[in-house]
Image 1 (cartoon, rainbow, N blue to C red):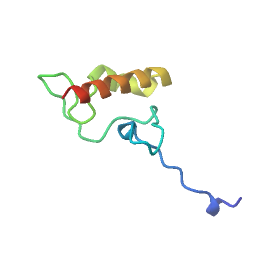
Image 2: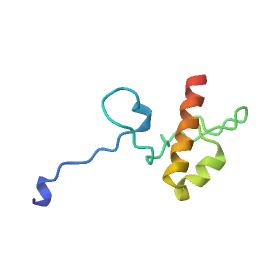
Image 3: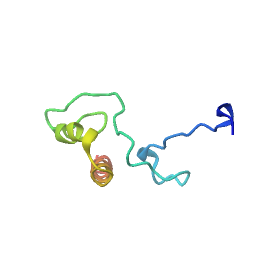
Image 4: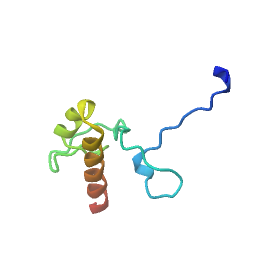
Length: 79
Protein backbone atom coordinates (compact mmCIF):
# COMPACT_ATOMS: atom_id res chain seq x y z
CA UNK A 1 0.00 0.00 0.00
CA UNK A 2 1.37 3.38 -0.93
CA UNK A 3 1.46 6.15 1.63
CA UNK A 4 -1.05 8.25 -0.28
CA UNK A 5 -3.51 5.35 -0.16
CA UNK A 6 -3.60 5.17 3.64
CA UNK A 7 -6.91 6.12 5.15
CA UNK A 8 -6.79 8.81 7.75
CA UNK A 9 -7.29 7.65 11.32
CA UNK A 10 -9.67 9.73 13.37
CA UNK A 11 -9.34 9.70 17.12
CA UNK A 12 -12.79 9.46 18.67
CA UNK A 13 -13.32 11.69 21.64
CA UNK A 14 -14.66 10.03 24.77
CA UNK A 15 -17.14 12.90 24.85
CA UNK A 16 -18.98 11.15 22.03
CA UNK A 17 -19.25 7.90 24.00
CA UNK A 18 -22.67 6.41 24.05
CA UNK A 19 -23.79 7.75 20.68
CA UNK A 20 -23.41 4.31 19.09
CA UNK A 21 -21.10 5.46 16.29
CA UNK A 22 -17.70 4.48 17.67
CA UNK A 23 -15.95 3.25 20.76
CA UNK A 24 -14.34 6.01 22.83
CA UNK A 25 -10.61 6.46 23.00
CA UNK A 26 -9.92 7.00 26.69
CA UNK A 27 -6.29 7.84 25.94
CA UNK A 28 -7.37 11.01 24.09
CA UNK A 29 -6.83 14.14 26.12
CA UNK A 30 -10.01 15.69 27.52
CA UNK A 31 -8.56 19.17 26.94
CA UNK A 32 -10.75 21.34 24.71
CA UNK A 33 -8.52 24.43 24.98
CA UNK A 34 -10.85 26.27 27.35
CA UNK A 35 -8.39 26.35 30.21
CA UNK A 36 -9.96 28.28 33.07
CA UNK A 37 -9.82 26.94 36.61
CA UNK A 38 -12.95 27.57 38.66
CA UNK A 39 -12.17 28.74 42.17
CA UNK A 40 -15.55 27.47 43.36
CA UNK A 41 -15.27 23.90 42.05
CA UNK A 42 -11.52 23.47 41.66
CA UNK A 43 -12.15 22.14 38.15
CA UNK A 44 -11.14 23.36 34.72
CA UNK A 45 -14.24 24.84 33.11
CA UNK A 46 -13.31 23.30 29.76
CA UNK A 47 -12.34 19.71 30.54
CA UNK A 48 -13.72 19.31 34.07
CA UNK A 49 -10.43 18.00 35.47
CA UNK A 50 -8.72 18.99 38.69
CA UNK A 51 -5.28 20.57 38.48
CA UNK A 52 -3.79 17.31 39.80
CA UNK A 53 -5.50 15.33 37.01
CA UNK A 54 -4.26 17.81 34.40
CA UNK A 55 -0.68 17.61 35.67
CA UNK A 56 -0.75 13.80 35.89
CA UNK A 57 -2.26 13.24 32.43
CA UNK A 58 1.00 13.12 30.45
CA UNK A 59 2.51 10.33 32.55
CA UNK A 60 -0.73 8.54 33.47
CA UNK A 61 -1.25 4.91 32.51
CA UNK A 62 -4.13 3.96 30.23
CA UNK A 63 -6.09 2.74 33.26
CA UNK A 64 -5.47 6.01 35.12
CA UNK A 65 -6.68 7.94 32.07
CA UNK A 66 -9.81 5.78 31.95
CA UNK A 67 -10.45 6.56 35.60
CA UNK A 68 -10.05 10.30 34.97
CA UNK A 69 -12.49 10.04 32.05
CA UNK A 70 -15.00 8.24 34.30
CA UNK A 71 -14.70 11.09 36.79
CA UNK A 72 -15.19 13.68 34.04
CA UNK A 73 -18.32 11.91 32.79
CA UNK A 74 -19.73 11.82 36.34
CA UNK A 75 -18.99 15.49 36.84
CA UNK A 76 -20.62 16.45 33.56
CA UNK A 77 -23.72 14.38 34.19
CA UNK A 78 -24.10 15.98 37.64
CA UNK A 79 -24.19 19.50 36.17
